[in-house]
Picture 1 (cartoon, rainbow, N blue to C red):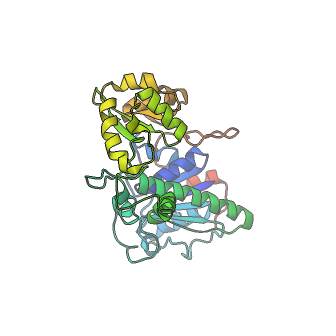
Picture 2: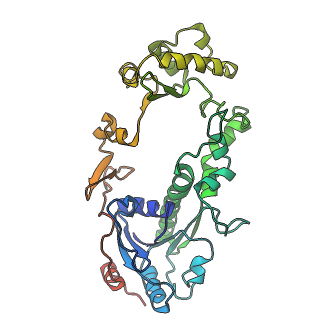
Picture 3: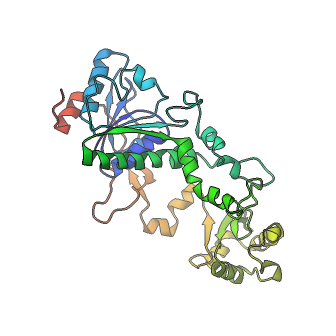
Length: 358
């Protein structure tokens, strides 16, 4: 699969990286002087770079040639930007009927806010996701930019591209994929809409529901050494084991799902978990069905035995980074190259793609 990626930030580069790891041939169109990436620019791995000045007719024509030779186009500009450059899906110079034209934005291609600036925090704010995350007695907490940019953005972009590509292989016709982070995040919130409809989720009680830290059996705890652990013993048999192994043996812990008791149960559990260090709790609970895991830093995660055993981190050009995911039994993914350190000519790209371009 041949992909033209217009250089940008956030979810689009990660989507292109994921597709490159899966074997796609990704060529990024950069601004003049911007095509070289540092080895530490990890989301730029696995693609080649071409520099064009898209304010000139000659380079726009070159971009048309590349697009007409590609299977997929990825762009992450505000609506209307590609059209103004003569590169929109209906531009006369683009005659590629099988092209999957993938558009990544926060607000979507239409709607009152479609042309407004924004970032991950804004997109997850209006979907109800941000307002559902954080302590009951504090402000909503941004979950890094994992939910909007990467969960509702990059991963939905990848799935949309792959689905549209499968359809194009069947029909010979491409289409526009309008991937908006607000849409993706709302789709990701489906479980919570379902729970609310069933009366099992109260949106007025941030930090008071069973998956947002309100339940004593599904939250994090501070240990004696100031480090943290997580427990997620939702099922009765797992909760029973957690009680047994952690010493939550008082009668006050007998009623697992009585939300009226969660606050007092949490307060008592906090005292119990502060009696031992994180390492001591790992020795007691790790690997059991108590649904336990230590809360690690990014550096600690690289050294965690399970992650080491799965080789989830690799080193490329001296930079530690994630291995490709997911994993395939017959056609394993691989990192094709470090981020591009050199810039190629468009004609060289077209020649390697072995396609006649009008």
